[in-house]
Length: 229
Image (cartoon, rainbow, N blue to C red; front, side, top):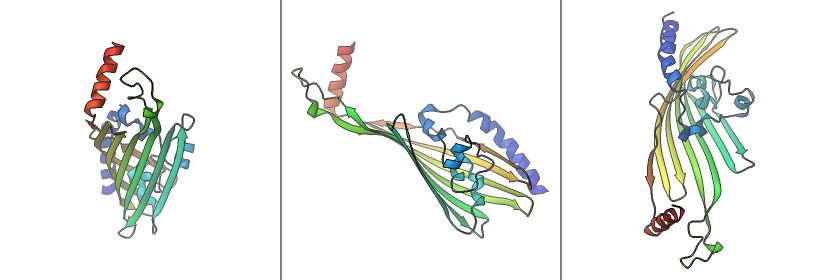
C-alpha cells in the first residue's frame, strides 16, 4: 500500500514537468521521431506499454520488462525521398535478479553529401566545379537508462526509470554542439490495465555551439554577404 501511494505521489510530481516538456526544443526535434517498428505502428502510443529495449526511448521505466536475458533493437528509416537518414539502436541488460535494468540507446539523424559551394567561384569570377566538396549535418543522441521495480506481484507491477541524455550535433567541420538532458518515467501495470507517465527534458535539453571557420572561409562569407546586401 505504501509503495502504491509513493507511486501516486511520483506521478503527481512528474505531471507538471510533463506539461512543461510539451514545449519542444526544435533544435532537438529528431528526438521526437520515435523508435522501433511496433512503437511507430501504434502511433507512438508506447509510454504505458513499452517493455523491451526500446523503452529506453519511450519510457525508461518499461525497461524492467526485460527479464533474464539482454534485449536489443535496431532500426533504419529514410525521409524526404532518402535525403535524411535516421538510425536507432538500443540494448537493455537486466541485473540484480531482474529487479533492475540498464539501458543504452543511440540515435542518429543526418543529411549526408551536402554540396559545399563556398569556393565555387574563383577570385577572378570564374566558376570551378572541382572546388565543390560535400559535408554532413548530423544529430546524435546517447541515452543511458536505469530502471527499477518498486513493486512486483502476480497482479501488479510498479516500476520507475530515468534517462541521462547526451546530445552531439555536427555540421561538417564548421560547427558542433554538445547538450545534456534528463528524462524520468513511471509505469503501473494491473491485471487488465496499464498506465504510464514520462517527463522528458526535465532540466531542458540545451545545446552549446562551437563554430570553426578558417580565415579564408570567413573572407568568402564576408564578401558573399556584401554582394547579397
